[in-house]
Length: 175
Image (cartoon, rainbow, N blue to C red; front, side, top):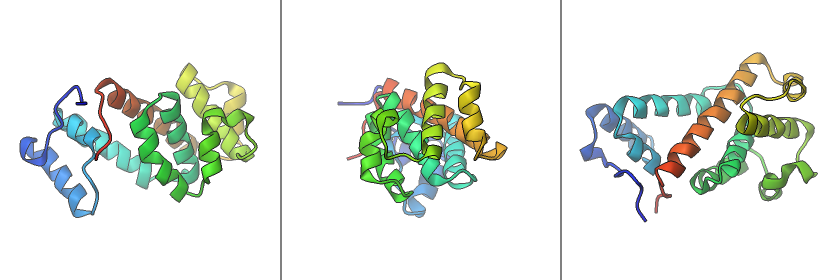
């Protein structure tokens, strides 16, 4: 099973992208197939990577709430790649396996606290309706700062885009 676009290796990419790949390898990371596909468009690859790093490493939003939203986006998009990649990250951020198991039907679960439920409701509404209701917005505004709300909203949108790229280009998990 092949991706719909060739996954480019370091020796095949624009020098700017080669530098990103090298930096990833030098930091002990793996150049993921998503980046190898995005490498066809060097500036998009660079900025896509930059935004992802900013959301994952440079924000104020709690990693647990951020990862809960990311995994829920992946679940709603039926994006196996995103789900598989982010389960370990969510576990590392403090969630438990029961929460992961219940995530597809989170609203009927007792495993999520009030804040987690509010973030999941917000995520569902932003993914499904583009705009969250005032009631749901008020719930997250009760415990998140404006900065955290912006980060959460952009994270939901960004990972919606990630899932669309992964699914449409049929990008498979690394071996």
